[in-house]
Image: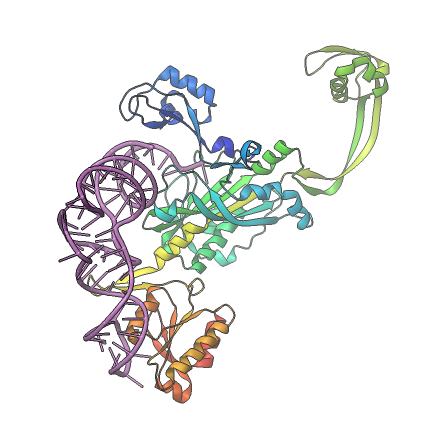
Length: 489
RNA sequence: GCGCACAUGAUCUAGUGGUUAUGAUACGAGGUUCCCAACCUCGUUACCCGAGUUCGAGUCUCGGUGUGCGCACCA
């Protein structure tokens, strides 16, 4: 499967080590001046070119290189124990399983395009030196959607909700600019409507998760950067402490993947398209008479048949034919027969195209936190707030009795229990320290609101609702507070 | 992978070849306080791992691991 998808080849770098200083370099990178595209060379040709050119080591200027070794970015492992173990790789992305199960998904969607399959899972890459904390991991989480479409069908996405939403676009050619996504599609900057559609949907998702959209941009892959099969590809980049980081890739992969797997396995990975009107085809030509041609041509019979069937209806026999493989044969009248019939063709099989939005979960979560984290005050009076969107905040509310006496503790405990019993809600109870200290604790971990129980609560059942972001307070009955919080879910 | 640096409670940090290893913050218990990290008392938690040198190593040496930075790498 990984060979079919190109990962075995594509995820390899050809490395060579300088025998003088032990510095490892990529052979193809060093030979860029001597070949138009050394990246595409097979290993043996690259080795020959390296021997011929003998480039200087970028580290020590020697020109004495070890034989080229293929370094694969996939982790290899062994399935099973001892000598019965079979070599295997940890997947570098989740996508491939969705291509190989395409026939089942196609059936599941009752054989009608468009449809999509999604997968959430881990991928593994043998990064040489990961660094950058959660940004480059050897084991990471991703969510990928393979959305299969008919390349000839008119896309009918409704872009009206995004008509006035200006986003930051960095096209492959030309300067960055602000535009709405539908405008960029109309102007031909975004090449495909379905790609534009997922860009728009992704923009909404990022906003709903609490990404600061001023720190979001769409960057189009340049031609030479795009995987060779992709027709168009836009990354969503988020800006944080590491600068602009690719967090989502939305790629139009054409029919590359299904075609590659079909070629590798022989299994049909296609969809059926009816013609608007069934096509009536008159077949008028020749074929071989197997009973006569078979014994006459033996091993060549198949090729003779192909050749004869390619002849026009006015061909005459006997005839001397040159086969595709070069042999010349004489075909007699008795070897052939006329074919004349009418066929009705209702439609055709074709390989769907696929648009793939792929989300780097860890990178997105990291940026949610990066964007939400805010320090105010100075060295002495630093105050930290985590402005997490309420939908992603792990704790929905904090219940704070002003004091744990005169029954306030009991009322607060009851309120806390009520909140936690509400579906999808998680509240914490905190009675230690001054009230300000408890607000600070809650702000620091991003609790969107605090509910404070005081003496008035004992009299009329109202609590103070304090907003994390503004510090503003209002009085609500406990019923209203519970309702409000569960309504957020 | 190469080079350089660093590694002490939950966090930040002081420190020295020699009794019980600083301090602050945080956290817990109690007190106080009627709404934004106040204050008082008490309390819990640490020298990255392994080997070596030494009477004695958290401190010195070597190796390992991890993290950061530079180079390379980043489909």
